[in-house]
Image (tube, rainbow, N blue to C red; front, top):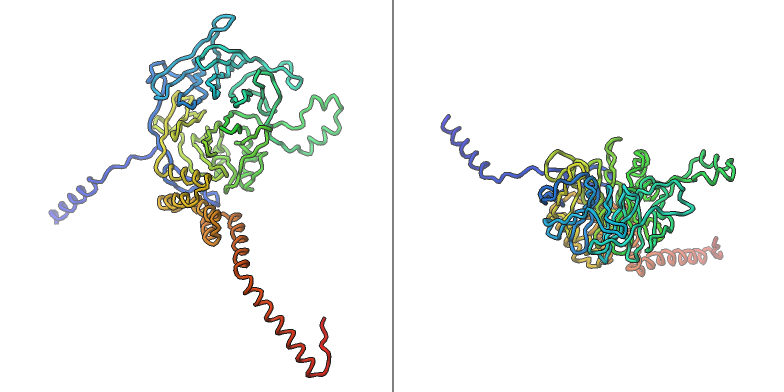
Length: 494
């Protein structure tokens, strides 16, 4: 018996010892189903490396606060605590340090710069936060101008200008997120002249607000703000000129109510997409509004601090509180979630503050760890992205095949069924679309597909339906007439 047991142990050791060891992943990837339950999903992105100042040979980063990637793949880093801007080549290995610049008044330096943006022509705009100004440099890093504190009747005389983040459109207009500003985004024209605020969130006044404004004097009304909009914390701009902004100032109860009500209202929206007039046009057609996690306790509510947008409207938002990246399609459907908080493990963070993309690679800046983590897309993630892009470009047959591949790797994917249902809707195959919308728990689209399918069935069988209705009517009339003749009475009709 001892010999038999020994042989069995040796066989087991040989079998299990020959299996490849699978490394434990640094985080849990998931999505949410219709009922708000987290559903495990394959990894769409996995960490592939980390960049810090020490490995670049320029000294450790100190509380870096912002990232920007140019069209040619260069990476700009606002190294806030070191009072400098770091520029990495497209190989992400060579580094250039920008610590000072020459002006007509002499050499000047930065003071805790928190934001950096590079315009299409290569001009560099830096939110020099500690110096209460914006510095404009040309594509070679030479000084162009200084934009100081904006002046206007709507800005208090004692206003302290503390620009944190900024974006510049193709016309040269500058959009600024400044500390303490709750009226929205500060807009400056190409000459740096203040033109007003835009994108202020709508806040519904309470009964007491309306009462006090009604009884206040004219002078008191002038000093009184009717609504106090939410303060934004970051801004991005896409190739079409739409501004994406985020805020982490919304209350727990407002977010909870928006999730429970599946709200599409932009008044409680931690991420917004603003058109040139400042109107939020972000689509919220998913199971839940894009708020990050939809299942959370009081101290687990997502705090969205940055957004990165692709060419086809797919966007990723960064959750500072939980260290997660939530990626949505243009309609607001959640594609995938990855990342998390942790110790020194690659792929986890301590205080993530900015997110950017280089091609399909995602970069996340951690201010506390003073490093940038690189994430590479997986085959599953590429399938999701390709399926969405193919649908957006009108190639519905190809998108259907991609969604089928997604389902082979993740049979729990409601989004794959929804994507296939939308593709079949576009091909006027309403019956098949109904099946997929049912499996994907997409009730509104199911109802729409059912209406179109019912119309199609009625149209296809109109002659038969008309005949089925006409035969009983004719039969009824003939019977009434026959009965009238037999009784000698004229039939009466009601």
